[in-house]
Length: 113
Image (cartoon, rainbow, N blue to C red; front, side, top):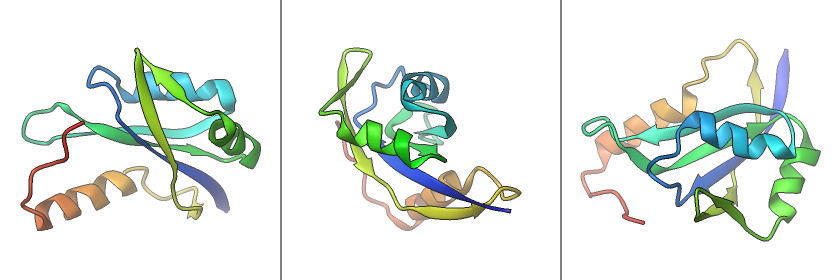
């Protein structure tokens, strides 16, 4: 069964924030279906961005209506991601796989925050 997801792209994450902390923070707005922090495959360190998915529009709108989000003392940059319909049986690593493909095709260094 297809499920509608409301996706957020989160930038400027502190390097100490894991997917667990990201999920915990955004859970105050509603049920988080997925929270993912992306890591550099060579160093294992956070790349400073991630994704949060909600299955309810109300939770998504609550996040977007808040003027700022602070996590571990750092102001996050929260942007609207793409609205997706996804099969509930598909793999949860779609964004990670996409990021790895992009990383392999782009030899320029990552943006520093």
